[in-house]
Image (tube, rainbow, N blue to C red; front, side):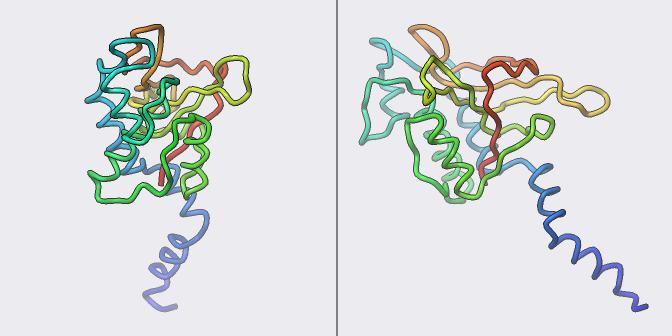
Length: 188
């Protein structure tokens, strides 16, 4: 056997689908981490001058969309855009002010769904909201808590538009409770 055989087997494994799944599972998204840092700097900012209004919300929504609707997805999209710019990596999907649409675009553009036990800071988390099937709420995973065996026991999230007016960007601890949670996604 050639002395290079173990290296060849390792490089073959590294190029395999199994290795790609392992890497995706273990390594957080650079854009997601950068976006979560942007989100952390925004804590305490939000609505001012009326429900779903204010200069911060105008900034999150962008120059072409100064609507008065819910702003959680606009906030996440803003953070992703600024975070991607800061890393020098492109944001591979178009921003939207719809939480489900933003989550789905992140996955469809090369991101992937993440199991609860594999979440990392910078991942997106989506919940069902309201009685309409299209309504949702989106946030960033900001911290992950694990027990001594490495099992996830809870996480914290940073989100905009939580609570009643004046809703602010805030960080909230979330237990393992799955009620209304749709899932997690990692941005590529």
